[in-house]
Image (spheres, rainbow, N blue to C red):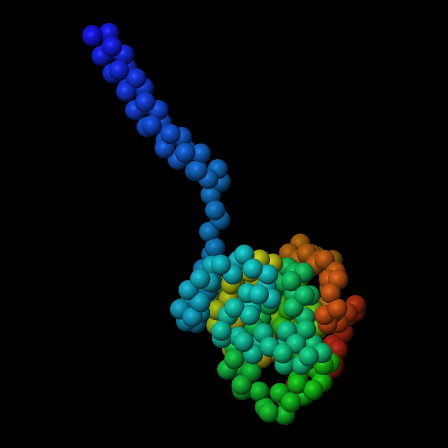
Length: 247
C-alpha cells in the first residue's frame, strides 16, 4: 500500500509541475523580441483639438498618406481638392502615396476664406488646381524640428518654412496649427491658410556647400496610375509665374 501511495503522489506532483510550466513557456514565447517604436506627438497650438477629433490618431502612422489625409475631419476640403472630388480632372492621391512627402494641408476654414471667384477657378480649371495642390507638397520625411528651410515644391516653385517644434510658419504668414502628424510615407502639417504659388519666395542660388536637401529627401517611385502627375520642377533657379491667378 505504501508503494502504491508513493507512486500516486509522484504522478500528481509531476502533473502539477507540467501544468505550471505550460503558461510560463507561453508567456516567455509571447514577449516581443523588439520594442514597438513610439509615435511622437504632433506639435502645434491646435493639436489638442486634432487629437480630440481623432482619438486613434496614432493609427495614421500605418496608413498611406492619402488615407491618412481623408481621415482627418478638419482638412476635408483639402482632401476633396487632391482626390478628384473638387475637380474630377485632378486626383493626385496615387502620386502622394508614392512618397516620402511633407504635405501642408489647409484647414476647412482656410478654404472657406478663399474668394468665391477663386474657388470657382479651382473647380473649373484643372491646371490652376493642380498648381495649387502641388505647391503644398515637397519631397522629404521631416518632423517638426527638421522641416525648416527653403525647398522646391512639386509644383516647381519654392516654399519657405521657418521655426521648429510647435511654432512653425510657412512663407512667413501661414501658421502650422498642428504638425508632424505621421502617415506611412509622409509627414502632415495642418496650416491655417491656403498657400499661394504666386507668393512663392525667390529661389536661393545654389552654392557648392548647399548639400543638405539632397541628404534629407528621397526620390519617390514613379507612380503607375493614371492620376494627375506632378508638374516638372524648374531646372534653373528662376522665379516661375503661377499657372493661374490665385486670390
